[in-house]
Length: 233
Ligand code: DC
Image (cartoon, rainbow, N blue to C red; front, side):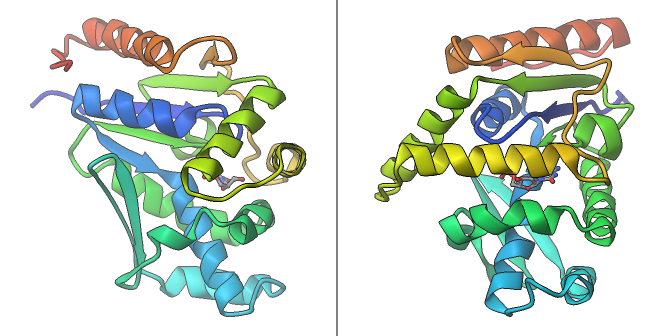
């Protein structure tokens, strides 16, 4: 049986991770796992249940929750205990609170365990997040760290909101991204940081297609070394 590959893609909000990781996974025929969606879904539930201020309750809730991620037709669908939450997890409210929820150490343990289970189910995966190459899968076969300048990241988020029919001022988005960068990079447990053996891809001035190709090339090199044949679309 040939070895399953784990491709870890990390980077800050708006660096192009999701768009890139989805296309890479589709072209390679690998499973795509968006770990940010898990932190977002727990944050949404914490807001809805009015327990944002109570870390213990958030951890209890997460521990008892069955989280299902499903990626079809270019969209990550997420369910908690069978309830579809996909339409709620990218709201401004969730954006503003998700970094603080993601700081909770016990919550991270629960979600990291789930992510490890999801990533080792007998299929090659592309997993994206903040700590995939450092904590979730430190032995990932390929590690990519995506970056982009803050203005470019803010513009991309503004376009995402606009595409969904919401106008959010650019300076508000930029402030939210900067704030999340600070919290995500400075938390005690598994902060956002580049793995030493990650390939850094700056997406500020390249097209999606170019960044996808760079990553596919890296996967190709690794697959060749391991004697694994890829079916690239
Ligand atoms: O990738 P995203 O913007 O959907 O992630 C939302 C938040 O979740 C982000 O601000 C930090 C957190 N996160 C994390 O702490 N660890 C991960 N592996 C993925 C996301």
